[in-house]
Amino acid sequence: MDSPPQMPELPARARVSALTTGDGRGAGRPSWLKRRLAGMAPLLVLVALCILLGILSPSFFSFRNLVWGVANQAAIPLILAMGATFVILMGSIDLSIEGILCVGAMIVALLCANDTNTNNFGWLGPLFALLACTALGLVSGLVHVGLRIPSFMATLGMWFVGLGIGTVILGGTAVRVLDPRVRAMAFLRIGYFPMAVWVAAAVFVLALLIERRTRFGRYVYAIGGGEDIAKLSGVPVARTRILAFTLAGFFTGIAAVLASAQLGQANTTIADGRLFMTITAVVVGGTALTGGWGGVVNSLVGTLTVVVLANGMVLLGISPYVHETVQGLMIIAAVALSVRRGARLVIK
Image 1 (tube, rainbow, N blue to C red):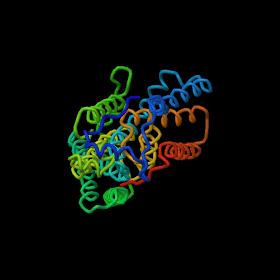
Image 2: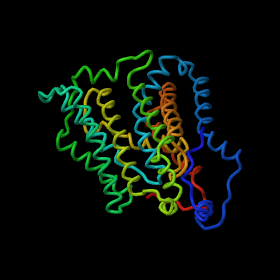
Image 3: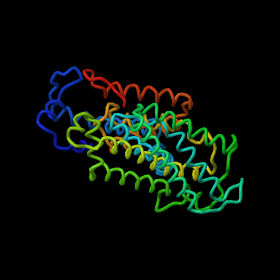
Image 4: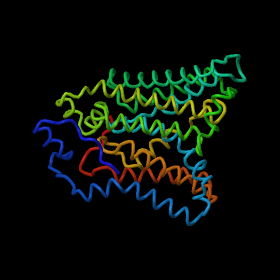
């Protein structure tokens, strides 16, 4: 996989400091071959996993399974992973995914044609949901930066705020989505693929362009590589952090619209398990929790790895309860392999 974009040009002393480990000793740069192999490891794991599942279950490589069992199932996790990637690249974490997604799905269900009220705002429902999720992401960033609260605490609070809003408004009931245009996003095919797959592909391209072709993308890597050095280099750290959480909220809003369309309803449990799967996908793909290394391509590979593994276990008839155990082991192994033993792991 491609190496991440270069950090902004740093002063000579800053460049020297950037090459030291947490205990201040020069670590040096790993050889080109080692860096290349480390970057390719997640992709090699994905390829090996596909080959193994293809041998154990011949139906794995059937066109229907690859489209509906893998690509379609990976659409929402991939969109969520795109937003989480920018936050994790800064060395932060976003735990608000499930709460924000719940709010977005609820707005779609209540504003579009449904079985609870007489609203029928059409595409304005998904638009308002997108705006609301983006605003909640903005609030998370403002709380994190403005009040100087660690990101995991600020976003954990936003998680429960979102679930609380959904519980109060829905009252524990489910609202069915009856708008055929919204439901079409889950089942309408364009070519050989469902629309959800095309939406996820467009989101991936957008995230890749933001990462590779904008100052914001370079600033995110700079902050993850060393916030103090980034400040000395003129990087607007506070503004970049707020924008990263806002962008994560925007992507979560897109996922919320697709989730409500696929499920055909909204309830307070619609996002259950999404957070763990998102973080697992990002970390398994090779993006370091310490920040500064990885990217959206890594998250694409990580998402496909998690989805392919889950799909393979279903085809092999393995109990769903084993899926969570395997995901837990995957994220422990991925974090253990990605953390430099000489550096301190700090999630900001």
